[in-house]
Image 1 (cartoon, helix red, strand yellow):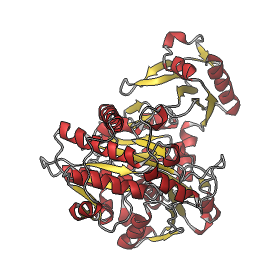
Image 2 (cartoon, one colour):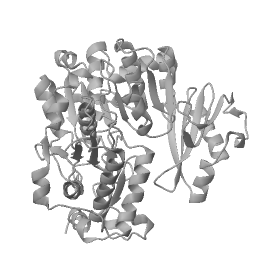
Image 3 (cartoon, one colour):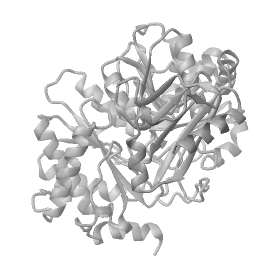
Image 4 (tube, helix red, strand yellow):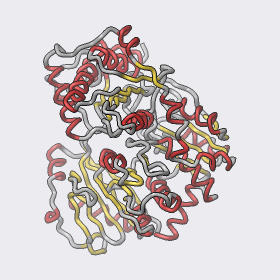
Length: 523
């Protein structure tokens, strides 16, 4: 019996123990993730979570269609069936892919926004079945509200608590319909066509088509395959999908840096297949299984996500002049300060938030942020006329923007970044992870600015000590210390027994290591 067969069998055969912490529903910004073999992602979890989502919708008065999508992970298929059975059992109107295929996260967000922009009283929301770039044996499910983006803490906390109540009560209050009824009642929705035909509202597709750029795409076995095929056909691009394989074991994937199979399009190890053939193309792209992340490859190799975010910000501020100058640029506080310098040079406002794309949702939805991006290769931006396109991360438009940048400026993204370093300096950036107990993680979370025992960092006067993000005042869950030439931020991992330290220097590698030494000494 193959590993994937065991994973699929355990989905229905294993019953989670509601009294075991590791087998409870943990529903964060990215929803609930787990593995059926460990009793953390099983049919009972999905039945309980979906019923909880039904309850949340009723509390919020959400009566429109619920857009449902899935990625290509093995557990996404059976989880989709469980979701549809509960939605049908509760008479919730749902929309599913008309081709019976896979649906990337940004397509669900886009569909929700388009529906709700009509002004209808029957607002829509969505469920996306994906563990993102996690290993093949994992499963995941997340909820996006009527604003199209990852649900806020109020929603996720309520859904988590209600789902665990349902599990503890033996699912007695979960209502399901038979699969045949669920199939009959679902409305088929052409996610791909609805998304692809409107791409010209957010990216200059004619410029890409006319440029003649040779483009390569590796969907990495994920849900973006049908989208990229449709993009190439609809816009007449010289675009080759280099890997059309969809395999729930992801057996074609090279191992990541730690030997695990992980579909991380920001990892040079995971992107090795595309990097081997990069010279066949002017530009090449990768996406993770739900296509909310992007990987950009040009002749210089795989771009560092921080470098590409800075390029995107500078380009958009210079080439979307029709957008109001009052719009801010969103970044997470552990993203490169190159973005800060680019924003300042363009006389715009920076909106710096804690880690997590959820902090950008309102700003994008209300058209207050022109762009929101995080260091882990996730971003989205407004349409040409200043409307939200996707309030969740959209790896597809970030890839297409790279082609627009090259078509309009004549520079590859890596060449564009080189120009930025000549203007603003060349930063050295690194993240280090350290083992940490639960007590140590809690102490890090509780640090205050007065706990910092030094006034200089690597020889420079400390300019700022933050335990709350400057942009929105939300708690960092750690702290960040800045100087004129560098910074570090320390925060506990939300999922592992680790403390993460991010640091950056605009002086050099030796200066960066001095910053790390002080950061480690403080911790």
